[in-house]
Length: 328
Image 1 (cartoon, rainbow, N blue to C red):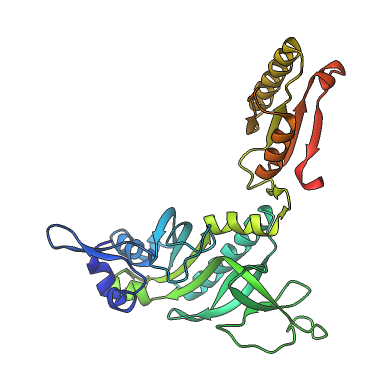
Image 2 (cartoon, helix red, strand yellow):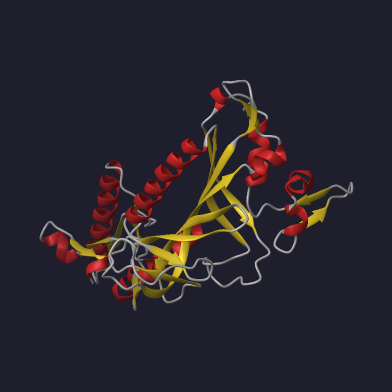
């Protein structure tokens, strides 16, 4: 990112500890984006001039770079990570607030489909607003601490937001405390970035105002890592269906008889083709020099939802053996 956009908002200096900054061979200053409010707002400023141009919603799936002092192994917290970002631009605060709730609902559905019970958690808005919201998944390996209602409809982040210890929706419920992993967040940005970067619109009455913004993000790598943390056993991963790299894992077994083995692997290939034609993502373990025991262990480790075992025995009964990973 060019230094100029970040200088306009003041974050070139205030966030220099977290931003990788450098100069090219011409002496121009650049930074690696650890977030994208500046760049997206500067882009929008070239395309929105009137209240008729908004609302506008821009999203991306993009790599971020953050000089993270607490970087850990794996995907939960790294210095390079992938995020789905969404930025919204509005003429009025009322429109922004309505869209904020739409995104919150969409995020809830996304996390539910991903097999994650994400708590909609009140948090500080930091420099942007009085409050924001995080989506937190309870896990012992989490870095955050949340207080939450056992009914699941209220939570707040302990470290950056203070609240009563009773649930405002269920007076009889005492809030519980737990460690959690943040997998998404949404912020009402107001006009901080639009004022700094000149993203203004002419209203219907002729007045000129900074556009009102919101910011929304899901950590894609962190969602994957969190799914593994909350969905596994001593054998390996148990992927939620929506996140699994494949729908089905076909495992043909080698027979003592070479002709039988040939028949088994031919049947497995046919099954693979049939499932692919039906639109399924299929992994075929076509290794003939690997024992059944090793194949089963590695299949459990990979954690694909369904395993189809093809062997001389199953062919004799014109069938195959089906195992569900989550039911083992």
